[in-house]
Length: 252
Image (tube, rainbow, N blue to C red; front, side, top):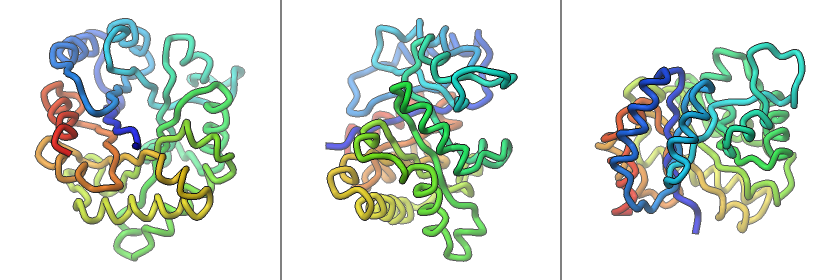
C-alpha cells in the first residue's frame, strides 16, 4: 500500500514567534492519522521546529537545498547542513523555484542526486502552466519534467522519491484542478513511471496533489485512486484547516 502524505509548505511565511505559535496549535490537534504529516518552515526556523516536534508524528522538512556539499554559494544550504538539524526530507522543483530562481530540469537532477547521496527523501514537484493546459500540452510538459530530472535514477532510488503534481495555474490562485483532472494526470504519471521502471515502482510511488487544496475539497481530491495526498500551501498556515485536510483521509 502506498504511503499517504500531507505536507505543509509554509514558503516565506512565519518568523520564529509565529512558527512556535503555529507549532503549538498543531501539537494541540495531533491525532492518530492515516497519513504521514510533514511541515516545511523557513530555513531559519527548521531547528526550532524540529526540537518542538521531536516526539510527535509531525516531520519537519526543508523547502529547498543546494546540490553542493559546501563552498562559495552565498545564501545556500546543503543536504548535510539540513541533516545536521534533524531534517531528512526536502522539497525540490517547486514551481516558484523554477519560475523565480530559474531552476532547470538539469539543475534539479543535480539536487536530486545530492539528496539521495545524503540518504534524504525527496518530494519532487512539477506541473504545467495555464498556457500548456489550454494548448493540450500539459501531458508532454509533465512527462518531460519527470524524465529530465528523475529518469536517470536506478529503480532502487525511487524508494526515496515522492512526487508532487502541482498545476502552476492552481497554486495560490484559488483555482483547483477538478478531481477528475487530478486523477487523469496522476494516472498518466503512474503510467509514465511504469513504462520506465515497471509496475512495482509505479504502484509503490506516492503521488501528491498540490494547488489550492482546502478543507472543502480535500476529501474529494484525495478519494481518487492515484492521489496519495497533498502538498499544501496557504491552508497549512492555519492549524485547524491543515488538520481538516489531514483528516480527509479518515474517510478515504
